[in-house]
Image (cartoon, rainbow, N blue to C red; front, side):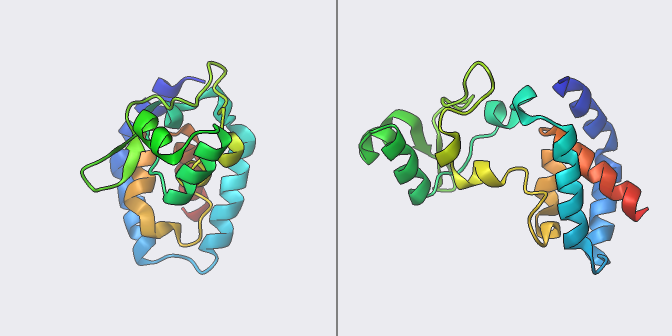
Length: 161
């Protein structure tokens, strides 16, 4: 997958996407949640995340306490050891990776802790969440990182005119 190609397309369409998402937030159709779920599912039949894994290479997830407990348990590590080896506290007080790409991303773009991955990873790119317009700014930003998000916004524009 040509991540740079999608990033270039997303950069070219940033203004258009921003205007579209802003207008959509002001006057959203009643069936928007149903439509976004359908488009999310459609996009992920076209995009294979394991061909890209750009999110795992460039975006560090926020770790909740539950995430830390699950992953540490999988790795058979004490919580304190897991945190000192992998995590740091950012300027917002959130626990994030010390460095990227994700230390659990294999050379095959598969996640070594996939079934216990952090909530932020499970929910990315958030295009199937209800009331996704509440995170417009994040969706716009994610079009630059995630080819699926770019396609999702494009398909949403096509459907809604």
